[in-house]
Length: 187
Image (cartoon, rainbow, N blue to C red; front, side, top):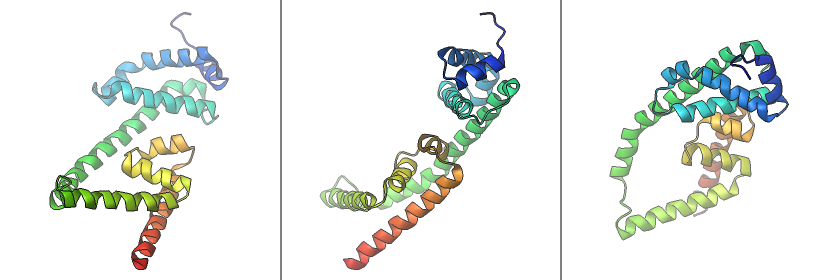
């Protein structure tokens, strides 16, 4: 095949789940790799490029992307979105790091027997409370707070919208708080 790629064919082949469509789409990504590399920086380029690729494939396959001629622009827009999300996550972690370090420094150490026992007890309580949540609530909380996945990853993996994610996370936290309060009152 020549270097010329018809975006209509690429979108049609990916939408039809044909292997050549994924190869063609990957070639389009390679054509755009220089500007994308500048946006993402060299350190995270391959990981972020893969995230963008998966988002684009999913939007084509689900029928959300309908304008084949705009494929390069769409890829660059998704790349900017992923980049902003990645930057927000990094800045949130950077912002929270001193707080977490302070919290850890002021709490009981896991290296002494009492501290280890206390930490084990806290983990057991949290596991029991999480087990009482429904599967979706538990999955959202674990993915977001423990596994530190971004909301975009969670929405994509669970096939939910950002609104459903925010609502689900809010309800799950409220449910977990209610369960914890009930256990504390019963003790």
